[in-house]
Image (cartoon, rainbow, N blue to C red):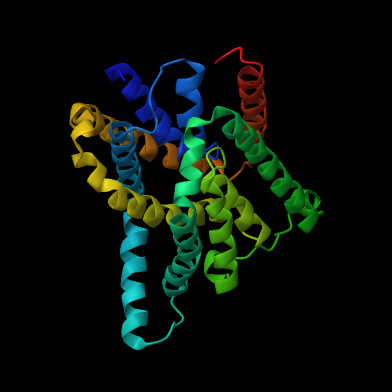
Length: 293
């Protein structure tokens, strides 16, 4: 892997981890499409990816630093008190716990099976296509939940949605299970979690915020667990690339989440869904017909 290739993957990670287009899917497909010949199962490449994810997690922590301070304080308060009080941050803290458990359990159980897909661009292409379908389906189901939303808004009426702290623990578990779909390379963590949040009657903006907050401990924990890979002999040659790439991925991720928090105030998942459908379909055709071998 050249330095230029490493930096391109770092930018790709920073963008696609938070944009609902699947970072894992793009990390598998782009090198294959460009015929870089990278061994994505090697210890050195996995060590490089670990640092990129760490940079993304740190960017999310910095962006939501005020939220995280309030959430951690509220969480500790519930532990000391032995119950959840009226503070919205306390409910948000436990919703994050409820949403993190499913992906943690499934990640441990399915890790070895899922990793076999990383070097298989054809199934990844299909998962990326499915990711677009999931988002379009989610938006369609959302409109069925609020069929008169557009008319009511045009008339100046207020459309009632739930706030994040109003969700129940079962809602958090549901969003967590949806996020677990991202174990499959090509399925977006943020996309699936946002869809689940929309179906629990959150606004796009709140569903995206919950998704990004929920992604932070998952990405951080995965990075920490994989951190020993940085010290295997094969990884020494990519440490410099990993460090620079991690910083670049973090900066890109920060810019991405800043953009998306504004974007979802007035827009939906449809553009990302159509992109995933097109990219997945084109990639599948290219690999299935062996135009790119």
